[in-house]
Image 1 (cartoon, rainbow, N blue to C red):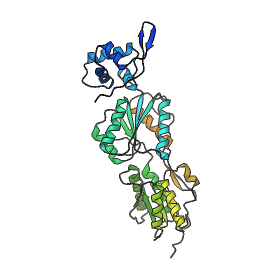
Image 2: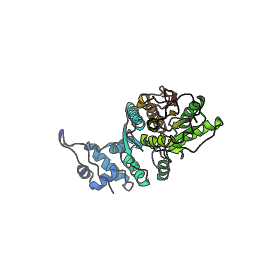
Image 3: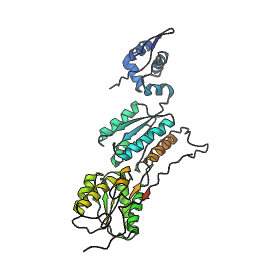
Image 4: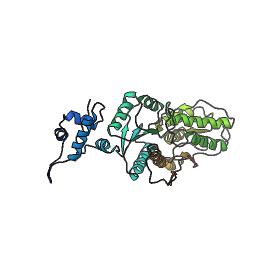
Length: 359
């Protein structure tokens, strides 16, 4: 099915500009059907080179500018990057996307985004097709589910793409070291004398959840401490609250490492309602360091991520793949400004030395 793109332009007679050009004006000037013009705009492979050139010449004569896709046909450059989003509204993705857009604009690029309502193959395929119709030169994938990259690999995407999260299938790893961040959180609890540490994990199939779980397990193994099956969460504070109520019934642990701050907030709320003191009886550590973490009760110990730096670094990496000169790099190709995205532990009041086990 052809996508007909109407756009801006003028039809001129001599020096007089009379009205905005349409796709049918281009068709008449090129002596082709308007469907043929639409196929040229959308890069249909069935158009003969001579016909395509005739249409492009007519577009130039009429100053017809349908959109970025048409400009790309003429210049071979759209100066547009695509972003596939697997989640929105949360602090992390929103911050990374804003920084990514700022970094792209600083380099003369626009950003078009496509949000995935789910990770079905047809949804991901539609997102890729939407971005390709905008003639994006490359795609940044901000969708942390493993199956998203599996589908992308099968689609044989014909523009460079990379992920903000570690993944298989050759996708570049740009995200903070999630494993290392989880190790920092768990090692902090171990350094406080905790030996029975519960992990409230993120949902299955999420790259970040898997990486943070591995970091937790590595830290326990390195300290020769016993492991226990993690509790599978869903990133929400409500889940953390329910988990705390359930955990409060047995209290055979002294610390919890939650895979994100929102679940940690729910944990502390649930423990408070159950009469369990944080951190006097149970220490809690989160991950992300969202702005509310410092205002929790008590303020939350957590792992800080530089979401803004991540967006900046993603744009730089994609432009390197595209072999585009970056004004923020010197002649040797080294970044002048290379945001530090290494995770850092931020110690606040929700973690404390292990108290003696109460009978």
